[in-house]
Image 1 (cartoon, helix red, strand yellow):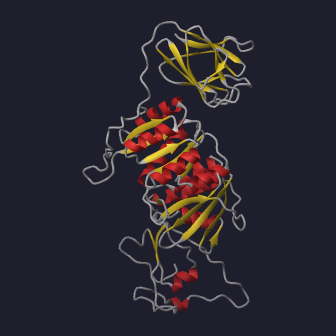
Image 2 (cartoon, rainbow, N blue to C red):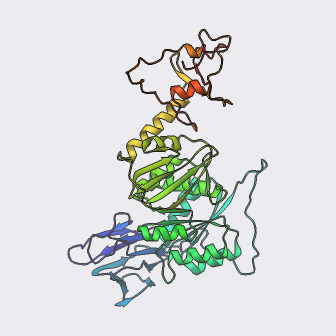
Image 3 (cartoon, helix red, strand yellow):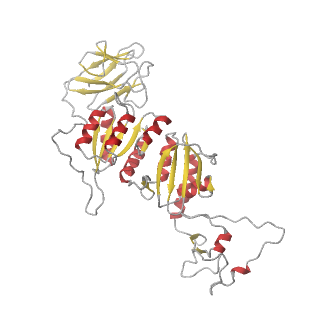
Length: 446
């Protein structure tokens, strides 16, 4: 088996077997070949065994990649030769000749003579079926991994293209009608923000997402301001990549409406907030439908404030996340007037998820499962219906000098909190499980 062997003192004997795929080398634990030495960058370089040679690509390392004492950005290492990463020296050992590996899927640029051809947009039901997605990253190992991983998850619904440089990305965009571009920030010559601006200017209707390993708030804000729908950090595990895939799938289905970029019945807000909090991000989530509009503030991965109408804090957060219709958008972070939420996001989202799950479960005999609110022309208390045993006016009044009991607030998906007085005033019926069996509750305010 062919392999790379470390020959430097202190690390001698450390090795990595080479196969038919790109291998990343660096100090970080996400690399296929991890070398824990200070002169090696977090992600230093990547290599691919091709026949009996090793293709070596430097990934903008701090201390450089050297072959024959010359710093290289891309070069070929022959059997028996050595290369140096910072202060660490490695040797290529070939055990048997190999057949050249095929390039990563989608990485070839179509000839200039090819005319643009549309992706298959609809199926027999008129729904979009196939999407063309372009990933731009200077790491061929990453592009190879993403093509395999997302290609399998998409179940042939994605046609994936990859580009390892801005010029290759722009060439693909000239010849293919791309639906979504996913790009890294760190690239040679032209960085991701600059490329994003060019793509947004030349192809404003293409959806754009930044997917990067590192990103501060300034670059995040710049990315969103330059046309990116989302700013995501590369995850470190399989579950994280599934979340990223789901988010990209949702972006492909988004339709713009007054700059509100996603529909609540297409994209799960819980998933969006979980990804942003896990990434330690800061942003404001604007949410609206025909009944309510509000904002959720996330700062450094913590939910710090929410406002919806007159509600603030957790009550506003719970109401906004209970909405099942409407739309939302992500905007750069701005500090709220005051923080109103102190609980951790994990506890908040878990409670909301449990509440939503209980709404879907069958009601028991003691459950109240439906609240309907009818508009009335006047604020006066209406006359009781014939089926009501007592008129609403006979309700006992509080004894003078005693404060009235605090009204218990209720909420349901997409509706306001309703107090007892509001229920009486609005002629609101509350139906219980046994009331639903062909009978109506007597009177109002039960």
